[in-house]
Image (cartoon, rainbow, N blue to C red; front, side, top):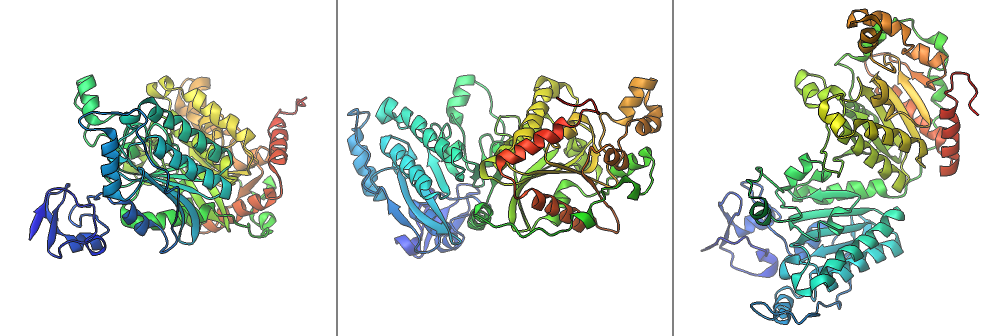
Length: 560
């Protein structure tokens, strides 16, 4: 029996070895029987540490059997500078070719995942640490061009130390070459998914490994620009715990999700299905029966009663509505700008009546722990940056946008002001007015001021029967007008914030009744009907109609 301290990169049954071989885990340091590790897709059964895989193992775990068709196998790395350190670069290349059987650090081809065709580019860490030189850059560019030519999603699986020093500035220029090709895919509305594995650093993260529409990472993967040793040596500071791990980046808004290896293929299958072409179901004809469009039909409630009901912590949250309204939902995370992943705004992709939609909403909670964690549904600027990112996602892929509003207002703290709260809200409002896709908003609870309008400037504005929309909170209005918050009930009655007030003023398009124990089916039917009503309009028609709708909120002055 043998024990090795180095994580294995081979599956014994497929690549040879002794039946009694053992491997010591780099995470928990337990010795694991090789066969057991293989059955667990090279993930430690004790601690979940993900061992590094070869290109062939990656293909076997992700693609449908027999679907991979390679291209670009003849593209070879070469010694453009005649570089020589402790040994000639040409010798290093020859050794990597013998060890991996590949001519470069990238393997490209077409394949399928759960019957959905894709183009894949996989970086081979076994070939000079997956570093990117001219050959690797060319292969990624080839994969992007093939994805554009065939209009197929592109999957880039990265494991790389960065740009290859032995090819000098030509390696650096691969960042521009690959970024340029991915920009063409973004412009064409073709899905790009990054799957970043351990490790992904340097030039790869400063280009193709960070530019996907979706960024997924394996648990524990180390991902960053500069390596931790370089950082600590340069700044002479202790680095945070779990620094540059996938989980750290997820918390800080840099990646969408951390997905264990056994869940990666089904997760990709779900995402690819959501991006596949679909035909919406015929109009349901439910809009007349579901929505209340006559204020006289609404039950009379005082404004203060409506506000109290809207604030009830037992009301469904955005995530509750997503679970009840959508056939499938994949939450996406992060603003990508360094702010973080604001839990007061949630969003992602969902399936609604055979159409993929992007959903964005404020998120509160049902108990004090969740309310506190989500800042009582009051977003920071980076929450609105996340919302804007998802709006752009909807625009790029032509997905309808559904927004659910439930917030007392945007967070008014010092840091929020320092980080540009006003600009973040303004950008969301402005972009919503110009989106080339249908936009349906439902105020499901509180609709406080600009923090609410940031998600509510679309084609259809609906409101739940026990929700409100206001220019300011009743307490804030009372404080400004009457000196303190004790006259909040009086202020609420003056603000015209109830569904009846809003409907009578034609500020909302309809009220969704709240009868029975569950409003989920009614909300779902109302949103479907609104999307059906907008489905026949093209981008220019949508923008033009939206412009006229919003321009009409002139208080009777006659917008010119």
